[in-house]
Amino acid sequence: MSSLAPASHGGARPQRRLKPVAFAVWAVVVVLGFALVFTLGAPLASSNQQRADARAPLALPVTEESAVAAADELVRIDYPAYANDSRSVKHGTSQGEEIWTITYSRSNPVGGVRITVSGRTGAIDASLFP
Image (cartoon, rainbow, N blue to C red):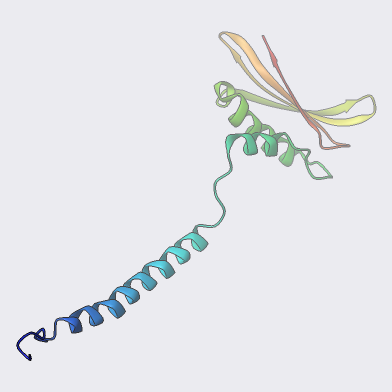
């Protein structure tokens, strides 16, 4: 009867050694994956999110530097054809409200975009002109 019993030549032992090694490799891969995700941080903003951020009112008090930076960002996102054109900045008042007007213009063909930033509310308005 002993001839009918399967011979044991250590066939099960290598499988038992592979399980802890496979588990260790899997655990390292999982930990490295989580580490990669956490170090990369938040996902990049979509173009709609960037556009909404660029059009959001500025923090008060509005300075010329913040108005120009906001206008540059808005032109880069919404009006890229004018991003490298001549820029002029004018500070003044309209109906008793402090405003900055940042204009990006070209002469051939004549056209441009005008960004107006309110000093009272931080609101940003953009318009194209021929």
